[in-house]
Image 1 (cartoon, one colour):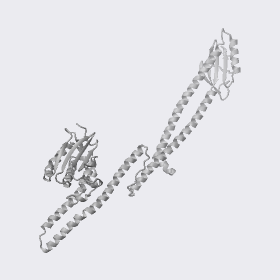
Image 2 (image 1 turned 90 degrees about the vertical axis):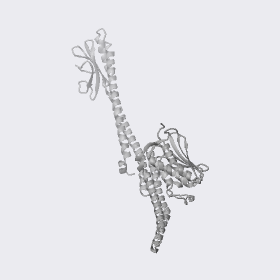
Image 3 (image 1 turned 180 degrees about the vertical axis):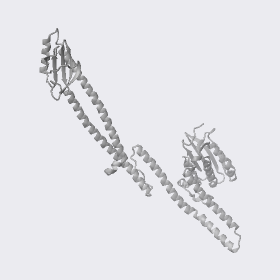
Image 4 (image 1 turned 135 degrees about the horizontal axis):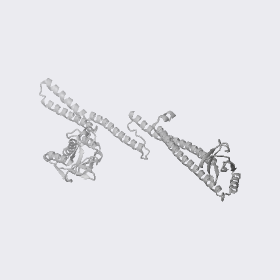
Length: 459
C-alpha cells in the first residue's frame, strides 16, 4: 500500500489516534509520578536537615557555647561546602562558627540560592534555622543529589516516552495494515461481484472477530444473491421451455380457428380451448409474480398473531369433501391443546401454503390414499406437517421440485404449472421457516418448521 493511501485509511488514523491517547496517558501518569517523587525527595531533605540540626543542637548543654562552636566547626570541616553548610550566629547576629555567613533567616525551613552571600555559585540549598539557647543555628543541605535524581528520572522518562510512542505507532501501523488488508479484500470482492463474478466471497481468517462476523454475514447475503440470480436464470430458462408448448398450442388453435372462419365452419370449440390455454398461461404468470412479491418481503406488513390450528381446521373443512369425492381421506392429527400453535405471520399466505401441499397430495396420490395434517411443538419451535401414504418423491428429486416450473416426468400428464411447491418455499422463507421433504415409507411427509422468532410462546 502506498504511504498516501495508508495515511488516508481509517484503520491507520484510528491507530494514530489511539497511539496519541496512549502516549498522552503515559505522559500524564509519568508527570504525576514525577511530581509525587519530587515532593517526597523535598520532604526527605527537610527531615534530614531538621535531624542534623537536632544532632548539632544537642551538644549545647549547660550554656557550653564552646562545645557548640567546636561541633559546628567540626561538621563544617568534614562536609563539602557543595553538600552541607552550617552557620552559627550569636544573639547580636555576629557570626560565631560555620562555613556559611548568613543572617536574618526565618525560623524553620527555607531555600538558599546562589544569589545570596556565602552560597556557592550555581547551587541551591534547603536550610533549617532555629534557636540554640540565645544563638541561631542554620543547617543547609544541597539540592544537588535531589536535582541529579530528578534529572535522571526526567531523562529516562523522556526516553521511555519516545520508546512508548514509537512502539505505539509501529504496533498501530502493523494492526492498521492488517485491518486495511482485510478491508481491501472486502472491497476487491465487492468489485468482483459488481463485475458479475457472483461466486466471489470475502476470505475469512477464522478468529471470530467483528470483521469476520460482518464478512460472514456479507458472504451469506452474497450466497443468497447468487441463489436468487441463478434462480432467475433458471426461471427464464424454464419459462422459455415450459411456456413455449402452451403458447405454440394456443397459436395452433387460433390458426385453426382462422382457417375454419374462412371456410365458414363453427369455431366455438376452438375459442373455448384457446380461452382455457390463455387462462392457464395467465395463472402461471400470476403465480410467478406472486412468488416474486413474496420473496421481496412485501407481505411482512400484514403479519399478525394467530393460531395455526385454526388454519389447519379451515383447510380440512375445505378439502375433506374434495378428498372423499376423489376416493381419498383427509384427517387431522391433534397434538396441541388450546392455542399452542400461535405464531406471527401472514394468515392468508400460510393458508395458501397448506392448501398447495394438500392439493399436491390430492393431485398426485392414487385413490385410497390417507392424507394427514398436524401441528406440533418441538421445543420452542412449531412444526406443521402434511403426510400421505402415496407414491412419494424420489430422494434425488426432492430439492428440484422446489424450482419454478419444475415437474416430475410422471406428473406432466396432470394439471398444474409446477409452481405450487415454489410458492410454498417462498412463503416459508418469508416467515423464516424451513421446508423439508421426508420419506414416509410409503408416502411423503412435508414438514414446515417455524423458528422461535416466529412461534409465539405457549399461552
